Length: 229
Image (cartoon, one colour):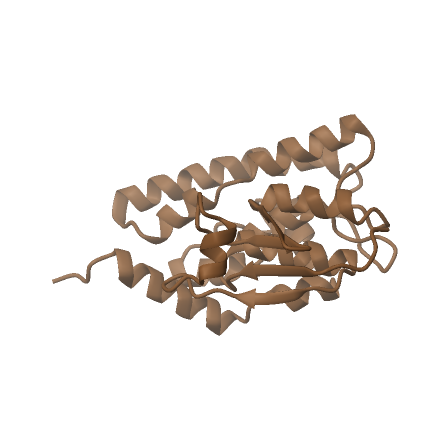
């Protein structure tokens, strides 16, 4: 294991990408300082560490910045080599995990669903459901015995982190939109997977409360969708 060092994470509580880095650090048992960023008034340090995208998350290890959530997760796993491992060591299993993690990158689609209305919004939701249809089938190859169970010895990994960061609070999104898009009847494996992840203490630590998420959705929607006359 790497020797004790300075680790800081610049994030924002509502960012699924920052949640990934936050959760990975907790799962690996790494001591770190968390710095909450105000994205309306970004800190000089954030702009200095990520001058290209100017976004969270940014992991700062011994003064050196690492950006982009997927890169941060790989960096964490390769730097702190003691278990639990975020990515499989077997190259083929690792490739499968990375493929599905990339496939599940639907944040932009979800964001557009939040700031559109009518037929445009429905089209976005339909596209999201199509992706979930494929994911439900694809996960049967990853989890041939059904949804995984986690314990002190079996921790969530890279794919679990990416999936939960996007869909872990799906019930809140369903309540906000008034549409149940991730139901146990249609997606039994995906929903069981989420429920299993919700029992993990580290996952619970990084999951914002429902009221806070609803308030953010409302703020974000009002910002981009003009009120009806």
